[in-house]
Length: 427
Image 1: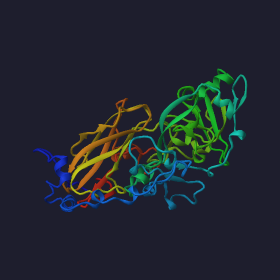
Image 2: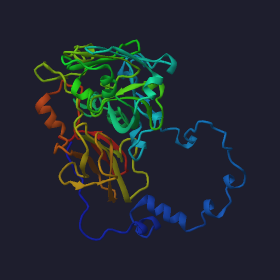
Image 3: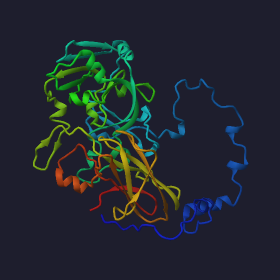
């Protein structure tokens, strides 16, 4: 597909007030319709509404607060054909419908290998064994007594955007990029627990394992384990949800989500990697010649425009348009995001909602005036190491078409004159 859109530049843009009042509505259908309605009384302003004539719900109507029914479409979604069943499967965060950076636990994506388990705090045990001076077992209450930290990090599945390697596949930011969430985790640094046990000098790696039936386990270099890993038991201020590893999980900042072992039950100090199933037959990068790279843990800089997008078309007609999205990097903080409306011919620096944080999502915005021209929307992230998010063609030059994991390519949405968006690939 080739780009045809023209970039709007030069001259004086009509003010936002003019568009919203209808003064600039000529040729802008939705705005013109709004202006026509504004010519007569608006009953939502002039008439007393039902919600203002009687009392509302009491403070104990919902002891645990829930989203209002008008937002019932903002939910995690599964792709039925992706896996054989939902027990070992994935659902996706509705990133297209969220703003800011913190993901509510109730709509943060899930990935399970044998289903989410129910494990009581009272029955929880965490064992530290292997090459240690003193093997230890901690209860949940033990963990609560250690000095804790609060850290905001993103967790991204290595397969996020994986189905897009061979071409545009899934039509929605939720499905192309929704295997990610960003939460404030509270817990104990893993190094604190390892220091309690005393790591022997020959210990170079840790093997972490979950309590679920899949016994999901991964090898992690000791240097990373002693750096910023957390054993977390809270997220966004409350207990972890069952699907996120209640009562305790491992947090491995900036590294692929499969390493963030849920229902963490064992940390074994070893002198080398265990070479488990999830780090050999899975979560490796298959190259053009059929060989596979191991140990590609870090999630490189990546971004996506969440609105407009296929699930968030332009409904308000011509005029002011907020283009927004998310950017992140497993190597550090995002320092900038560029946005293009013409498929990469020209780029504009986006405004960051807040300065980038280490290994956390960053929200970006570009205030645009849309007059009905087709757009080919893309975003391009940069992180503090100087790394720039690549195109899909650049990734293919290195890895071919056989890969699944670690696809951090630039994403393209084609927006037509009706404001509808579609997942496309520009060649």
